[in-house]
Length: 171
Image 1: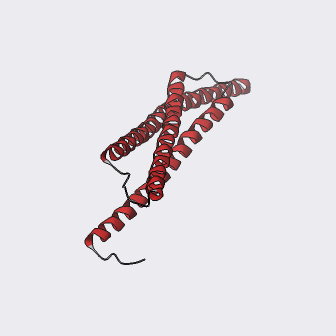
Image 2: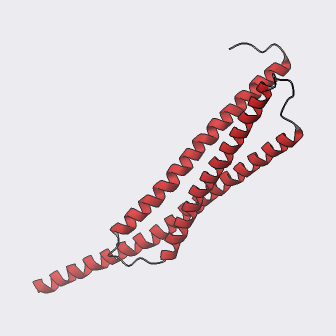
């Protein structure tokens, strides 16, 4: 890589590198959030199917956790859509600039403000996705803890009853 010749060149190169790294980090986080959201949703549905014979309590917690996990997935999709639209708009502006042989720079104040607004929207979608995932995890954990504790108590009572019946038969 070529060493920047001026302070301004250094600034622009470093700024572009930082933006590129930030973009990669955000992309990685988006993938992780999407994987966790969908994984928890599918896992909880499969566990529920396996427990269909058992009367679960506070089922509204499970439903609410699914709503938050679904909201997290939807927010990520809207964030992707906003990001894609923004990138396509940037490519369009750069192509227009190239077609005009780089004479009239297309990044006027109106365009920069529009781009800032898009970045703000994407950040909002990302925050909604993140916090919805957190809420979904918390609600799912509470639901699972309460119900698995109930199942364990029922199983323990059942075992105690069986032991008592066996002891009564021995007498």
